[in-house]
Each structure stands twice: as C-alpha cells, then as structure tokens.
Image (cartoon, rainbow, N blue to C red; front, side, top):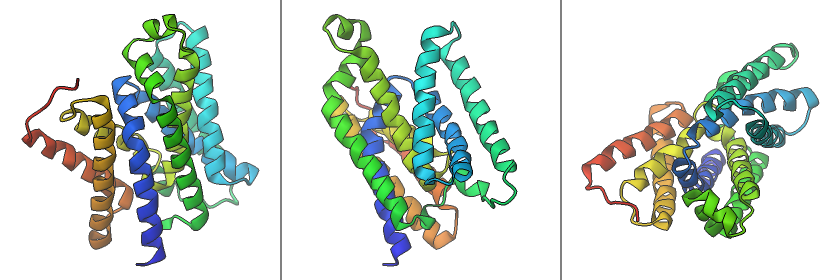
Amino acid sequence: MPSFILFALIAGLSLAIVAGPLGSFVVWRKMAYFGDTLSHASLLGVALGFMLKINLTFAVIICCVLIAILLVSLQRKQPLASDTLLGILAHSTLSLGLVVLSFMPNVRVDVMEYLFGDILTITQTDLYWIVGGCLLTLILIIALWRHLLSITVNEELSAVEGLPVAIIRLALMLMVAIVIAVAMKIVGVLLIASLLIIPPATAQRHAKSPEQMAVGASILGILAVCLGLVFSYYSNAPTGPAIVVSAAAIFLLSFLLPRRVLA
C-alpha cells in the first residue's frame, strides 16, 4: 500500500474514532455552530503559522483554543445571544485569516487545500499531530464521560451536586478545538464540523443509550472515511468532500431502518 494512502487511512480513522463521542456531545448540546466557528477560525491559525514560521497544526490548535476561551469570556460579559457572538467570530476570523495571507506575497498558499482539505498530502509529521491530538482528546472524553453527560442533561442540578460546570464545559470546548485543528488537513476548514455532526446524528436515530450512540457514531465515521477514500481513489474526486458525501449518504440510508428512541 502506498505510504500516502496508509497515512490518509490512519489519519481518517483516528479522526472518525474520536469524532463519534465528541460529536455526540456537540449534537446533544446543540453546538454545531460552535464547531463551524472554530473551523472558520482555523484559517486564521494557518495565516499566523505562516507569518510566525511555526508548525501550522500547532498554530491552528493555539488559535482555536484561544477563540474558544474568548467565546466563553464574551458569553459571560456580553448580553448578545450565543449565535450572534458565534456569527461575529466565525466571519471575522475567516476574513482576517484571508487578509493576513494576502499581506504575505512571498508565501504561496493553496487556500482551497485548507478550505476543503487534502488528506492525501498528509506527511509523517502531520500524522503524529493528528494521532496525538485524537488520542489525547479520546482519553479526556473517557475520563470526563460521566461529568460531561451530567452537565449535558442538567447543568443546574450538576452545579448543585458540586460539579465544576464551567470548567467541564470549557474542557469540552477545548476538546472540540483540538479535534478541529488536527482535522483541518483531512476535510478542510469548511467541512470539519460535518464529521462532528453527521455520524452522531445518524447514530442517534438507532441508539438506545448515550454509549451506543457514541460508539455507533465512531463506527459510522470509520465507514464514511473508508468509503470516501475508495470513492476518491477511483473517481479522482476531492477526498475531503468525498468523505462528507459518504457520511451524508449513510445518514440518508439510515432513514430506511426503523428508528429507536434514545434512553
């Protein structure tokens, strides 16, 4: 197997495994627009990475984490609705990233690669970042699973029981930020959030418990990555969009099966 296919497969499977349980919380907590905002902000991280001449994945992780912290801070201090704040941050950071890139005439950047991803160009260094970021996030999800479920069901009751709700909520946002940053090269900044939403939404229709939904979302994500890679390999279609199209096709096919109610 060519190394670029092997790297693409390992990276895609790593992302699918962690996107399942993490995306389940995104769906339960209705944070889809938050994922979109961070994915838009990741282009600013790319621009800053080129400007400061540092590793792009590291720059995107730092940028997404700072945007997540800024959002939490603004939500506490500003009377604006969350979707308004997210809209301001999403479009501002995406535009700022493009403006910063335009001021670097000596840097040749394929913006389309970052907007829509190119999983087949993943290098060994990229793979270390992706697998490391996904593994760290998966360990944190397992460690915080019960607390994350508790604040998702009822934040007020969780606070009364003594859980540090604000810290756990921030930890969830930071995990989303890390996964979006490492996934940028797989499906691009405009399509990242789809992998966090479509497989969990598909699994939700047929799961009997939160754990079943999380595991099912990971399995469906793995299936979407494999189908997308095969389709892209034989049709020469762009790989990132092919993965998302595969996930969407699985979602539509799931309507052919009877729906179960999540316990």
